[in-house]
Image 1 (cartoon, rainbow, N blue to C red):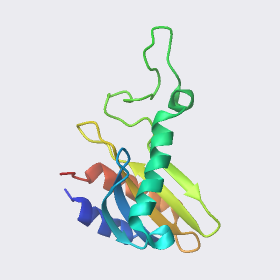
Image 2 (cartoon, rainbow, N blue to C red):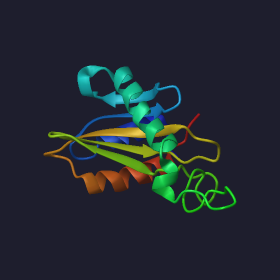
Image 3 (cartoon, helix red, strand yellow):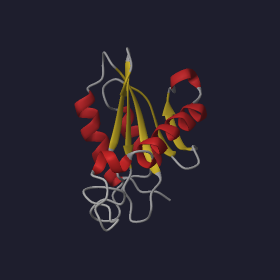
Image 4 (cartoon, one colour):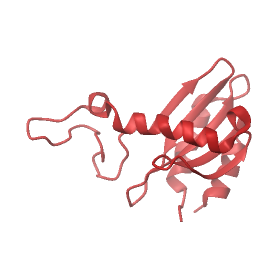
Length: 144
Protein backbone atom coordinates (compact mmCIF):
# COMPACT_ATOMS: atom_id res chain seq x y z
CA UNK A 1 0.00 0.00 0.00
CA UNK A 2 1.64 3.23 -1.14
CA UNK A 3 2.16 6.27 1.03
CA UNK A 4 1.84 9.89 0.03
CA UNK A 5 5.12 10.20 -1.88
CA UNK A 6 4.61 7.00 -3.86
CA UNK A 7 1.03 7.97 -4.69
CA UNK A 8 2.05 11.41 -5.91
CA UNK A 9 4.75 9.93 -8.14
CA UNK A 10 2.16 7.51 -9.51
CA UNK A 11 -0.15 10.43 -10.29
CA UNK A 12 2.64 12.21 -12.15
CA UNK A 13 2.96 9.25 -14.52
CA UNK A 14 -0.49 10.04 -15.94
CA UNK A 15 -0.45 11.62 -19.41
CA UNK A 16 -0.46 15.40 -19.17
CA UNK A 17 0.18 15.57 -15.41
CA UNK A 18 1.67 18.94 -14.44
CA UNK A 19 1.53 18.61 -10.69
CA UNK A 20 -0.09 16.72 -7.83
CA UNK A 21 -0.57 17.19 -4.12
CA UNK A 22 -2.22 15.62 -1.11
CA UNK A 23 -4.03 18.29 0.89
CA UNK A 24 -5.81 18.45 4.23
CA UNK A 25 -8.96 20.43 3.47
CA UNK A 26 -9.48 21.56 7.08
CA UNK A 27 -6.07 23.20 7.54
CA UNK A 28 -5.36 23.93 3.87
CA UNK A 29 -1.87 22.46 4.18
CA UNK A 30 -0.22 20.30 1.56
CA UNK A 31 0.86 17.00 3.09
CA UNK A 32 2.93 16.34 0.00
CA UNK A 33 3.43 17.87 -3.43
CA UNK A 34 5.25 17.00 -6.63
CA UNK A 35 5.65 18.72 -10.00
CA UNK A 36 4.46 22.23 -10.74
CA UNK A 37 1.72 24.16 -9.01
CA UNK A 38 -0.65 26.64 -10.65
CA UNK A 39 0.83 30.07 -10.01
CA UNK A 40 4.10 28.45 -8.92
CA UNK A 41 3.26 28.22 -5.20
CA UNK A 42 2.24 24.76 -3.93
CA UNK A 43 1.16 26.03 -0.50
CA UNK A 44 -1.06 28.76 -1.95
CA UNK A 45 -2.58 26.24 -4.35
CA UNK A 46 -3.22 23.84 -1.46
CA UNK A 47 -5.01 26.56 0.50
CA UNK A 48 -7.12 27.56 -2.51
CA UNK A 49 -8.12 24.00 -3.41
CA UNK A 50 -8.85 23.27 0.26
CA UNK A 51 -11.38 26.11 0.19
CA UNK A 52 -13.07 24.50 -2.83
CA UNK A 53 -13.12 21.15 -1.02
CA UNK A 54 -14.66 22.73 2.08
CA UNK A 55 -17.33 24.41 -0.01
CA UNK A 56 -18.17 21.15 -1.76
CA UNK A 57 -18.40 19.14 1.43
CA UNK A 58 -20.04 21.65 3.75
CA UNK A 59 -22.12 24.10 1.69
CA UNK A 60 -25.17 22.84 -0.07
CA UNK A 61 -24.12 19.21 0.08
CA UNK A 62 -27.58 18.19 1.31
CA UNK A 63 -29.17 19.63 -1.80
CA UNK A 64 -26.66 17.85 -4.03
CA UNK A 65 -26.83 14.46 -2.33
CA UNK A 66 -30.47 13.99 -1.49
CA UNK A 67 -31.03 16.14 1.60
CA UNK A 68 -32.62 14.82 4.77
CA UNK A 69 -35.96 13.16 5.42
CA UNK A 70 -38.65 13.87 8.04
CA UNK A 71 -36.59 12.27 10.81
CA UNK A 72 -33.61 14.56 10.28
CA UNK A 73 -31.56 11.60 9.08
CA UNK A 74 -29.43 12.07 6.02
CA UNK A 75 -30.74 10.15 3.03
CA UNK A 76 -29.04 9.04 -0.16
CA UNK A 77 -25.28 9.46 -0.17
CA UNK A 78 -25.25 12.45 2.15
CA UNK A 79 -22.51 13.27 4.65
CA UNK A 80 -20.98 10.08 5.87
CA UNK A 81 -22.42 8.19 2.88
CA UNK A 82 -24.07 4.81 3.24
CA UNK A 83 -21.21 3.33 5.24
CA UNK A 84 -20.71 6.37 7.46
CA UNK A 85 -17.12 6.68 6.17
CA UNK A 86 -17.68 7.86 2.61
CA UNK A 87 -17.20 11.58 1.90
CA UNK A 88 -20.35 13.28 0.62
CA UNK A 89 -18.53 14.17 -2.62
CA UNK A 90 -16.20 11.76 -4.41
CA UNK A 91 -14.38 14.22 -6.61
CA UNK A 92 -14.46 17.68 -8.15
CA UNK A 93 -13.43 18.52 -11.69
CA UNK A 94 -12.53 22.08 -12.61
CA UNK A 95 -11.80 22.96 -16.21
CA UNK A 96 -9.79 25.92 -17.44
CA UNK A 97 -8.93 26.95 -20.97
CA UNK A 98 -5.64 25.04 -20.83
CA UNK A 99 -5.94 22.60 -17.92
CA UNK A 100 -8.03 20.36 -15.71
CA UNK A 101 -7.95 20.21 -11.93
CA UNK A 102 -9.18 17.00 -10.39
CA UNK A 103 -9.75 16.81 -6.63
CA UNK A 104 -10.36 13.28 -5.32
CA UNK A 105 -11.41 12.83 -1.69
CA UNK A 106 -9.60 10.05 0.18
CA UNK A 107 -11.76 7.60 2.12
CA UNK A 108 -10.21 6.17 5.28
CA UNK A 109 -11.34 4.18 8.30
CA UNK A 110 -11.26 7.41 10.31
CA UNK A 111 -12.76 10.82 9.53
CA UNK A 112 -10.55 11.76 6.63
CA UNK A 113 -10.18 15.39 5.65
CA UNK A 114 -7.72 14.68 2.85
CA UNK A 115 -7.95 14.91 -0.91
CA UNK A 116 -5.60 14.44 -3.83
CA UNK A 117 -5.28 17.34 -6.28
CA UNK A 118 -4.10 16.53 -9.80
CA UNK A 119 -3.33 19.28 -12.31
CA UNK A 120 -3.52 18.10 -15.93
CA UNK A 121 -2.59 19.79 -19.17
CA UNK A 122 -5.79 19.90 -21.21
CA UNK A 123 -4.16 19.17 -24.58
CA UNK A 124 -2.11 16.19 -23.34
CA UNK A 125 -4.21 14.83 -20.48
CA UNK A 126 -7.01 12.30 -20.53
CA UNK A 127 -9.57 13.38 -17.95
CA UNK A 128 -11.48 10.08 -17.91
CA UNK A 129 -8.31 8.03 -17.42
CA UNK A 130 -7.03 10.43 -14.77
CA UNK A 131 -10.30 10.23 -12.84
CA UNK A 132 -10.25 6.42 -12.85
CA UNK A 133 -6.57 6.17 -11.89
CA UNK A 134 -6.84 8.84 -9.22
CA UNK A 135 -9.79 7.00 -7.64
CA UNK A 136 -7.77 3.76 -7.60
CA UNK A 137 -4.78 5.57 -6.15
CA UNK A 138 -6.86 7.30 -3.45
CA UNK A 139 -8.33 3.94 -2.43
CA UNK A 140 -4.84 2.50 -1.92
CA UNK A 141 -3.33 5.56 -0.26
CA UNK A 142 -2.01 4.99 3.25
CA UNK A 143 -1.91 8.06 5.47
CA UNK A 144 0.28 8.37 8.52
